[in-house]
Image 1 (cartoon, protein in one colour):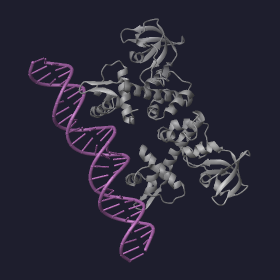
Image 2 (spheres, protein in one colour):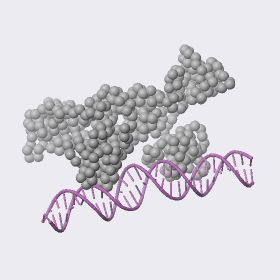
Image 3 (cartoon, rainbow over the protein chains, first blue to last red):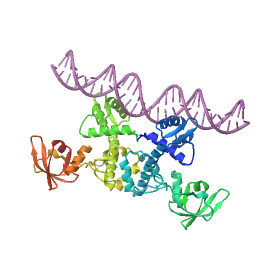
Length: 220
Length: 220
DNA sequence: TAAAAAATTTAGACAATCCTAAAAATATTT
DNA sequence: AAATATTTTTAGGATTGTCTAAATTTTTTA
């Protein structure tokens, strides 16, 4: 088992997340932006991760994660999401408070720890934001989900996932009643700005902007 | 609040633990040995910790922890011991498995996390080895305890603490039935090698060496 | 398609932390 | 108290990861 430093883990995770968005090729600038660092630092690190065969790196062209790299990244993601569940379910954190702490906890090295934690939490399948938790086998089982912005009038879905873990966004969701599991019905779509009028749990109707609807996913 | 790096925290904690043993002055070599590093590295770090006013450092003479340093160290110790309780109570670790993981977890930076963890665990006063957990106020409340080796024949005590967190020692304790809370009665003391014959919980009688009895503490 | 703009990499420095080897200070022994 | 031994510090170098500035490559634009 190849071991990665704290920093290498963070780079690999960023590359994983970027490649997860369907991009075929990830650029140096994207990584730098995601990690709040400079492109020059990214270039240095790409060489190292390439040497460790976590990525395929072609100078000036871009980066692609290898199977080994993906497997390592998924282990980190698994830890991150399990810790998020712990923080929310057991320690009563709000879903907008967990990210930074989980960002630290995900680097703790102990298989026993993480398997026991998984057991303790009752083998959860999703984290507090609705993201799937990779299994101990390193597999990510996804449920098919649709962006709220892609629904049409009278479509119904159940809120399954929010992308964008920012505090402001999550607090906004809390405020208007957008929680994992609520039933959402699209009442109207304003073609001018692509804002949506939606009904939540048959109770209340609110209007949300395109920016918000892009970050919310539902299952049908 | 002055912030310390992961490494600085480890040095400070080592200095705290060494000074806790009643030493007035801690030497470079002792620290190096405790941290499995070289004296030269220790000298470098002492300069830094001295600049941050965590210690009083007199070249060639030795080191003394300041009030500020002690307060920082106690926060780390608090985190370490709370995590140990979590691992044993909630995740069903054995007491000989917790040290290394807690050694990592103690560096996670989040007051909210540690206060919520404390709450979740029911505000425990002692860790799985019987060591007192410093309060959120940074105070360490101790119970008076006596080394098992200092008891005399027919004395009775309750096992409250084991020093020496080594795996081998803790597994030995498990094997012979020495757990926190058991009642110990001194049956005989062999003057030749200072080994003890003790009765545990009125049930069984075993013989333990001086080395073992030195690491076991009881309350009366 | 040639020039300009943007992205990327390299070169060289810096900070933290570690090390080895040598120098300096302290402690011990005779 | 001088010689020896031990401890501690300094000097200088390695490593990891960061950065800025300059050089290089790719992309865009005119």
